[in-house]
Image (cartoon, rainbow, N blue to C red; front, side, top):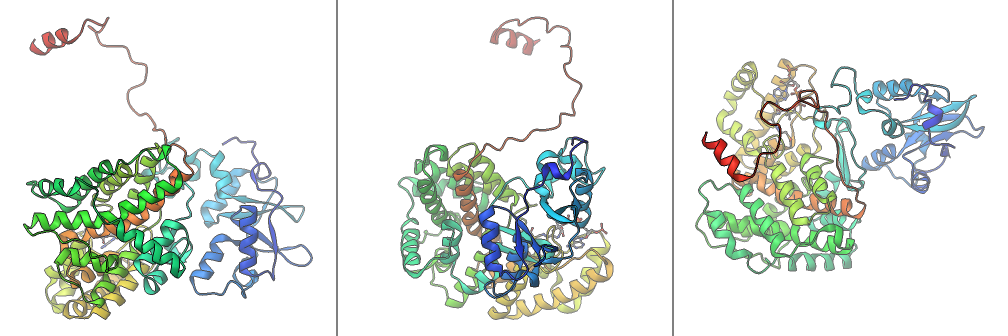
Length: 531
Ligand code: ACO
């Protein structure tokens, strides 16, 4: 970072300002209109009283606050930390890093002169200077890109400290409580929750899109018969074939409308592919999707061949909604990288499924269920859990990289599981209580809470999804998130092409003896190979 740079060089100026008594709805318009993430809040005499950010607005709305009657004074960060125009960018960076702010007001002679955003600084900074010192060599982003924002998105976000995630601004758990799969799918695919007529039209299109393209059905039985069959690997291959059968064109060459249409087609067809593969593998005839059933009910019917109870279908639907999207996770990033090359949607989804297949991402919700099986009875829980932690093992279904409070998905899935009822749910609740107590005692201060996987397995098991189909089920709902990300990337594309820090032998190196001149073609290779 250039040593001479000051905050004044980088800040957004003049500052976008709002009065203390403006409502959240009005403030939101001001932020949108100025295309900024935060505004300074000034009192009647023009003095700085606080800062209000897009995050504050989303957080408030996510917690049920009415944006049309609440004023910014009620939600702003009062008496914010300030910078002055002559502060160095390094000093500003220290504050961003230590205090975890994203925007800071900049004063000039006591008056608000601008707003510095962490983005302004990151844009000019070498990434290593944004990280805590010593965490990676100079020139290298943090391992795993942790904490590095690599794109802008309006699909959704995860706020781990708050235990909150949203889809296009709507609290995702509220959506799962109050909406159908198709309504939330429309929100992610089309940008807004649908009105009745829009929902009808969208649902009709989604049902029509479940039909496999010609030639694909015949290719599924051989995949399902592969000796090392696994549902997710088989689905990845089938999605690739389907993309080819649909004549999936490079997103670079098609208009946004066609990209969205194809995204819908692929998201609709993925559960059909998965269920056909599953039933072929078990030697059972495939079950066609019932056009009268919604996504979740149809999913269970294709799995079992029987019409599910409304309760089971709704429980699965809520799980599916909760797992449609979750920030810029590895598979979403993968889908976007592939799309950024201008490639086709089939390729992007095939890559995304490949990323999800890794145990560090798609994980194994079945492992939490396996832990319950291993414990067996409530009286054995404490001893089992203590022994696991004592021997350095992790309790499956607990802890999360991002959530350092209750994982909101686990909170809702616990409710869903409780509504489904049954002895396993009761048992799971007892084990959960014991696990939280034991973790708190043996791993104090680590902030380990129940994660999505603990009750996901219980819910899916209760509605008849077998353990080897847990992660593939997750892949189906996540296809909705992936396709939203693909459409977003394609609509505003720039090739994602980062660089790597070379750490091999110093270059250029002298060639070894005997490599003086090119010595011929294949014959020469054959001679050497035989010598
Ligand atoms: N059980 C016991 N201890 C744990 C657990 C756990 N489930 N999770 C973390 N810890 C402990 C670690 O041992 C470590 O303790 P230490 O300070 O004594 O070394 C401390 O908490 C911090 O652990 P990290 O490895 O830094 O945590 P990280 O953020 O990297 O891990 C993860 C997150 C991978 C989810 C972890 O909590 C875990 O392995 N959980 C169990 C597996 C699981 O449930 N995975 C599904 C996650 S949900 C999802 O990804 C969709």
